[in-house]
Image 1 (tube, rainbow, N blue to C red):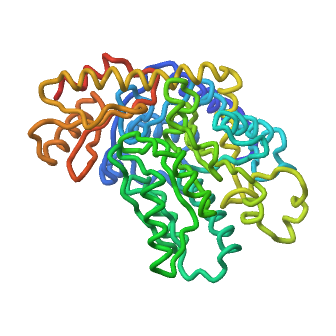
Image 2: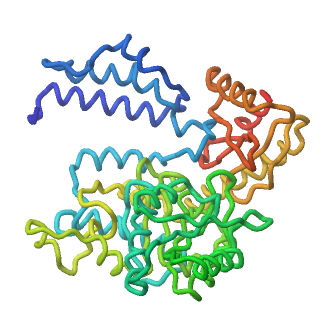
Image 3: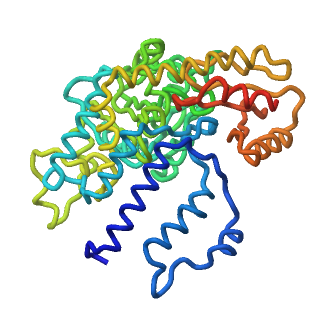
Length: 448
């Protein structure tokens, strides 16, 4: 198993050939198959003697890979898809082959140095001080949870007698905030948005003050969303920051999808107030063209996170010095250097290329909204703010939305599952792939 033989060399050539073909060719859309169907074809792939490298690769390339929906297909506009740059995908191969450990500076100094430079770019465009710092974690759920745990630790110092802790957020906050509350055993205070569907400081202030005046509960974090998943709306971050500061409450910005827009001049004004955040997240695997999985978690004062998250054991004491060890800043110890493919692509292409690519998603959304507004069967839910366009099909029931979506995937035209807004079924396009064209959009709209 651990010798580089001629068989391994042949397998390496086959893996590289497949990988290069996947990069060079238009990605397939493909789609899921049932477990029973896959088992009927493949049986048990784990055997005492093993299938051999070439046969196992064949099982993957000819069956298993085809039973997955490609997130980088130009007509996969579902959820928040992913469109890694060719450079980032290629460098992910390097990361896998290098067996690098990214938990400590001692073991991964060069890799951590590079990751931190990518984090520094995010800190700079967000306007946080140079003393800010962060770490790449698995995804937005882990990033939000790690930041909120630090927020609660800080609140405990000020209000040690609090009986029940609370996170304040909007009903449009990502599901990971509710998940974090469940894991932490704290409550959620879901606050109504304003007429623009944004969470703002006035609404939050009223709700928090009433909670504090009438219960023994206390809010330890206000979460603003910088680009909601469903509609792409950026909360009023500036007023949220003021409300948080006036009450000495931690202000966290969940920008897993939308905070990438910071590098796009056309929408930069929407993020006023993020510079006052105590922490924020953004997922490069969403709209910053990195492969899965990479969430950048940033703290205004990383020393607070280190205080909360550093793990202690006799075998770890050698790591506890002034070096920057990523394992000290989130809920993890062992970690892959998941920020390196993002760093490589960013360093190789330059930040101007990233600005241009993000602007392309915004342009696609605006142009698509015009087509939808002119379509006789469709109605826009609202004008797009970032790169998400939400709309309805006149006269359709929820079942008809699902039937259309299923047929679209079955015909390999696109992947557009329905969502809901205000209790009603909607369709939504999430544009993060610069390879998506208006011809792709028209192809989908022609089916409606």
